[in-house]
Structures are given as structure tokens and as C-alpha cells.
Amino acid sequence: MARFYLPPMTRALLAATVFFTLLNFTLLNSALHPRSNWVERVANPLIGVGNGIPYLTIIPGKSIVYPWVFALATVVEQNLAGLIINGATLFYGGRYLERAWGEKEFAKFILFVAMVPNILSFLLYLAAYVITSSTVPLHTTISGGIAIQAGFLVSFKQLVPEHTVAIAKGLLRMRVKHFPAIFLLANTLSGIVLGTETAMFLAYFGFMTAWIYLRFYRASPSLSSAATGDGSVIKGDASDTFAFAHFFPEPIQTPMSHFADGIYNVLLSLGVCTPFSTEDIDAGNHQASARAEGDLPSIMNPNSRGGRGGATRAEAERRRALALKALDKRLHAAAARTAAPATQSPSDASNVLGETSYEPERPDAPTTSAS
Image (tube, rainbow, N blue to C red):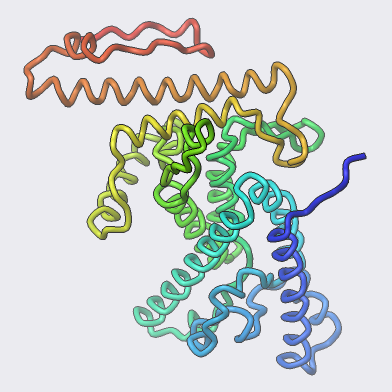
């Protein structure tokens, strides 16, 4: 039997989540509800929301004098259900990512994805108070690991998008690349129907923060560095398959692409990120293909080395097909842009740039002819 191992950063996060959540429950019941009956004392920790101590969680009207809560609130859950869900997320997702990235990179990611959504949510509720003059936003409790959960799903989309997770003993099978969109949809519905809008905001802010960090900032060793040992790194992930629109189902990828382009232009104008060069995109696609063929371990069992035989080959084949499809779109887009100033016909531009037609999953798809 293989020895169980939990990486140090993941172990520390789990311990902090359990400790500070229990501390919040204890202080809340003893200080804020000294005369509450036993039903209230049990129900609030189990399923209640809005349960937070000002110096452990973010409460917009009070947190300005407790600046440490912008980091600490992430490991304070408001109820037992949240503790169980976030604990499982840290246990499986944390040990997987820490083993894949290393302790230092994992710690940087956690700090970024934990603090930025908390600060943005704090500012959002302050803005709501200024606009509406209602004091309700000032007393809202902001805490929990929803932002980290969203960030982990974005990370899995980058590392193993075609990995299939079997749920309920194989009754439901789903690819990892669909998880972020489903997570956002579930939190949106919960926010509207159940009134958990704080979790909804944290989910969206966590998703955007993780994607921006991984897309533009996180440094990872280049393939040439792994081969030659020269220490070169790639900043961000410019691969086509990690573009913002690819987080959503194909029918809405086009409108989401237009939305992402607008956000991207705003980020460029603010100096938050720099545009990718053609070399950056090619290097990102190469890195993505290498990850697909690298036989990464399973998310639920990071000690393993991916699937076996045909499952691993099929996953790599799907990723190669997606990369080729994205490359083909870029080639045709480039042809369309150069055709107008050069007064070339579409067929001429296509001949200059070449075409890719490798589609192993759709061998009977009709061939597109230039018009």
C-alpha cells in the first residue's frame, strides 16, 4: 500500500480552515448569541449564512480596522456544509496542484486568488451602500473558500481539460473543462434563488482572478528549459485552448469571445497585462500539447500517472484535435485580415497560409471550400 502524503501548504490550509472555522463558531455562539436556544446554536453552524466575527471575517462596515481579514476570511466557513465542501476541495485539489506546481508557486496562487476576490467583494458592498444608502451591505459577512474553489477549477481546465471525472460510480461522466462554467451557473442560480449572492460574487471574482493570473502572469519552465537546463521560463499561458471563450459551451463561445476581447482591451489600456506575440501563442500551444502527452496524474489520485492505455491516448488525441482546430481558426482569421489590404482572394490567402484539416473525432465532416 502506497504511503499517504499531503503536501505542506495543503496541510496548512486544511488545518487553518478547520481551526478558524471552529473558532468563529465558538466565538459567535458565546459572544453574539449568549441567550440563543439550543436549536439556534445547532442550526446556524450547520446551514446558516451571515455568521461571522468582525476580526475573523470581512464585514464591510467594520473590516477596515481589521486588515488581516482580507486574507484570513478565506479559511473561515460560515457553516458546516461549507467546511465539508471546501475541505474536500483543498484535500483533493490542493495536493494535486501543489505537487504539479511546487509549494512556492502554489502558495503564490492561493494568496492571489484568496485576497483579490475578497477585496473586490468588499469594494462592491461598499459601492452598494453608497448607491442605495441601505445599511444592509455594511453588515454582510464575506468569507469562505468559494473563490479558491473557482480558482482550482480554472487551474484544472489549464492542466487537464480533457480529463474525464466519473461521478456516482460512473453514472455521470464529465470532462474537467466543463467544470468552471457549471460552477458559475450553479452559484448564479443559488444566488438568485436562495439569496447566496455573496458566494456568487466570490465565485465570479475567483474565476476571473485565477484566469488572469494563469493567463498573463504565472511563470512556468519552458520546454527548452526542461531539455537544456537553461532556466528559461514562459510568462502566462497564451495557448488557444486556454482562451476565455473556451471555458464556455461552443454555442456561446463567439459572443463570449467578443466580451473577452473588450475586457482584454481594457486590461491593456490599464497596463494590467501585455499583448501576446505570435511566438508567445505558439509556445503556449506547444506547452499545452506537451501537457496533454505528459500523462499527468489523476486529480482524485495524484500518486497515479494518468489513465491507462487507450484512455490516456484518447485524452491526448482530443487535446491535439482541439489545438489544431484553434490553430485553423487563427490561420483563417489571419487570412481574412491580410486579404483586404493585399486585395487577395480568400483562396489565395488560404494557399499562402495553408490549412489544417486533421479532425479525428469528425471524419465525416464536410470539407469547407473557400467562397
